[in-house]
Image: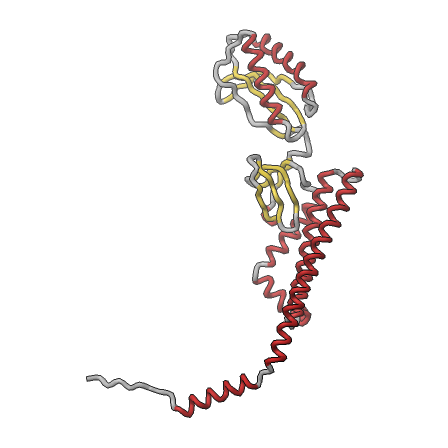
Length: 298
C-alpha cells in the first residue's frame, strides 16, 4: 500500500515570513501615501478639464477663422475645407500629445528620459507607429500635389464617391449610396479625380436600321436644342457621334460634355427626352435603350 508524505511548512518559517510582511507594511507612511494619491487624482482631474477646455476653444477658434475667410472668398471652397480638416487634425493630435505628456509627468514617469534614451521610439515602432508615420507622409504629399480636395468626386481603388474630409491619417469618402468610408492615406496609390475636367456622358438609343436615321437625328437635334439652355452644367453642345455597334445591337450615340457630377442626371434626362420625342414621332425602339456609363475626358 503506497505511503503519502504531506509536507508542511515549519512554524518558524511561517512566522518569519509573516514578520517580514508586517515590517514592510509598518514601514509604509500611509498618511503620506494617501495625501500623495489624492494630490495626483486632483491634478489629473484638473489637467483633464483644462485640456478639454483648451481643445474645445481651439476648435472653435479654428472653425470661426476659416468661416470668415470662406465668406471673404479668399481661397476656393474645396481647398479651404481641406486645409480646415487638416489643421483640425494637427491641433487635435498636438493637444492629445501634450495631454499624455502631462499625465505621465503627474504620475512621475520620466518622459524626458524615455525620449532621450530612444527607447520610446523603438517601442512606438514596434506598436505600429510606422504605419502612422506613413499615413502622415502620404497625406502631406497628397496635399502638396493637390491630388484632390474636399468636395471632389474621386475614385480611389474600388471606392468611388465625394471627398468628405482629409486628415493626417485618413481620407473620408462618401460613396454614391451615402456610406461614409475611411481610407488610410498609406493605402492611396492611384487617384482618379473626376472633378478636375469636364465629364462625357454617352447616351445610346437602340435603333432599327430599317427606319429613317436622318429623321431620328433631326428629332434628337431638336431635343438637344430645347434642353441645352436648361442645363448650365453642360460645357459643350451635345453632339451626335453617329451609329455605333454595341453588344446589344446598333445604337445612335450622343456625347454630352458637362461639369463633373452632373453627367448622371443629364444622361438620364436627355435619354428620357429622346425616347419620348422618338416615340411620339412614330419611331419604334427595338428594345430597352442602352445607356452606357459616363466616361471622363475633355
